[in-house]
Length: 178
Image 1 (tube, rainbow, N blue to C red):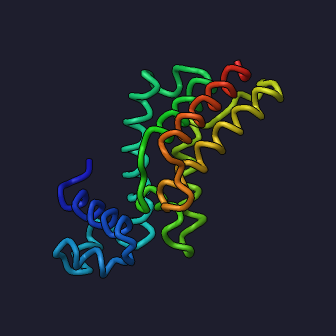
Image 2: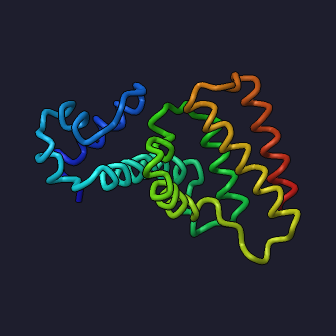
């Protein structure tokens, strides 16, 4: 169970990432009003704090993804899960904290591994999927990943009409994957 101070630390770190600020144990401790040793009581290392931050972002995403899907990911097939991911991404605005996985080059492998571990239930495709299904679902996921990254970084962000057309394309790709 996450206590209040733990949650405040993660919120401060996320806000700092959103504002393009540097995130370190020292900077987050100052932001929350703790000493560095006080923060380290909750997170013994920057790696532990950043992994917890990845979990916090994905926890929020999973809540919204499950709402979009209307079920838990294990209860439905890959077309529905990946479709829900694309619909979620194309209907949201993101910020720098949503790309926390890229926040620290020294922790990149660890953060990517955690991100993949947590998001695989949403992205996995059955081994017996046809080549067409697999290719279409990969295209949908990569389209959604690109929209997420564009929104979070502010680079080449699709406008409302482009998002609408991308959602139509997603539906075409998904229909062909069934």
